[in-house]
Image 1 (cartoon, protein in one colour):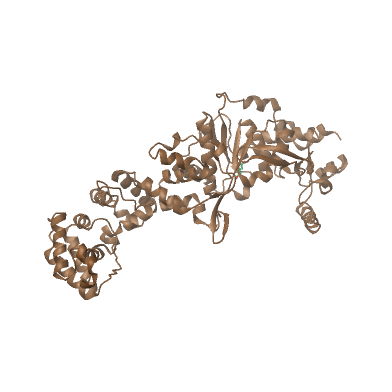
Image 2 (cartoon, rainbow, N blue to C red):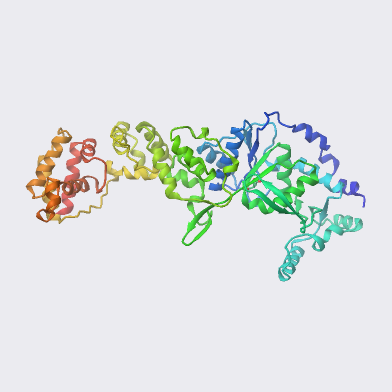
Length: 547
Ligand code: GLU
């Protein structure tokens, strides 16, 4: 068969440049020895999975720690999955978590374009080269024929796919090919695989270590009928010409590795190092399963923004999943910037990473507790502007007032920082009782309403805004004593049956009446922040619910 003629008929010379052009256009990068070039190569589906951040962080750390380059490539070869505005979503969601690219889609860079759809020419040039060498061929099989093959393979328990005897178009004669072309039959270009599934080779995966890879024997599609490459083909060409040295990607791609190894081989390119990152899993009842886009809201990166998790907290948590020695480092250096941690590929998990939101919340509480009240104000305000209710947005009108609330609720100035805040949504909800617009309490007391009514009334009668904390406390003790409640805890503990309760029960009644909650920071300070008028109004409101 005249392969040159066939290659020219399928991909005319005017559509491509000589291969040497591309090697010159995308030269080796001049980087220090050991510098890694890594990338994130998402499809623009509009959905950013936690796994995307996970892989992005690993690649980002490795590149930047080694003085290399981390770039963004958009793998938009699948038109069906493409969503408008998806690239903005990729940029904005990763930027939120502090993941910065050095070059790539919508950024500058010498190795672009970084959208695969804009790189058709280079893919065509190499597809043509493979046809010329007899390593690729046109396939005219329609969906129906392929379906029949699939059914036959399933029935006979054979490996699925287009290979060996099932690769019908592999053996078409020259006449048959030209007849099909003349008849205008649509076709794809397939790799003419040289592999043998009986052959296995040792392979060093950067994350998983020594593994065994079986040779590929599938005649995979490299160019689809519209001339758009498949992911397999495009990524091999792009990783070569963007001079990627290390590919850290999800382990779902491990099964495609044989195809990729063969493609790099036939293309004459040096294989980059590959590392397959374990997937993020969660415990679901008695089973452990992959975090699912459909079932788990926390699988989506938008979840963390909607909830208002501090980016630092999510990043820190991700690092605990990514590197097994990170937590130890964090304990030793809780205040060091995360980027000072020495990331190592060798410490990446080899099997599933277990996602645990309670642990994230714990880390998050610690990160939140490190903010100043002013930083917290800004963080909550930014969150509320985007995700808060109209009521919550009004909390930020009086900055001075809110700063007082935050100082109290964060325990600033106290012996120990309070660690009540997990994320912005929960924090803003938690401080809602300081704002009348959001104050709709469900009073729940542990004493009869007659007693509560009496205590609230008595306290109201003696309450003075100007009292300092100890005068205020003395008054509360007085109210307790008048109503038979113990004020001496020792005496109470010795004979609790002699009293209806003690002074802390009285404080709780006042707390519930003032805030609607039985657990809050210091009540005297709360009343100081609310002010006299509002405190009295709250007591009156609580009383009105009791009569
Ligand atoms: N486009 C692939 C994806 O959406 C990227 C796989 C890779 O990193 O090679 O996950």
